[in-house]
Length: 151
Image: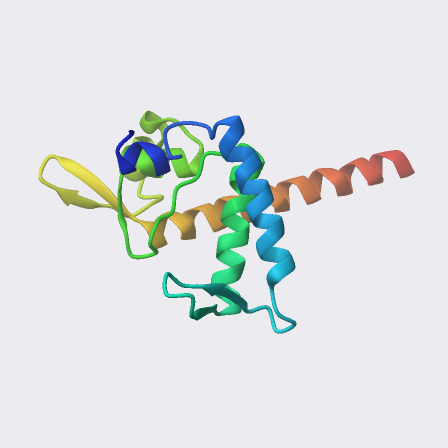
């Protein structure tokens, strides 16, 4: 039998066909089982009902949805300190490019010995700024295209 880390670690590998099918089936079952208020009730080991609040049900269904699409998945607590490789993976950039962003002060970091760590919240703030700038640039390109077509 595989150890538990191998079985649930979808951060370094894609899910198998069996995991994808299982996740799709489970996501559908959970979505169908939700109450009108969005809560989800499941049975514990003792058969007693366990109620998951709507926000927790959303997380579970979203997670299973990603796996059912064949995505790699990493759960990161918001207060987590990330390695530069983890941060680069989240931004979908190379580690050297992330290091450049850190050196330029685009993303704050915390030195830990000879390494650097990035707070998850700081990384997400940078990602939000980056995504907003991309959206603004695309909107401007679309506007310029319309102006060009109109003339």
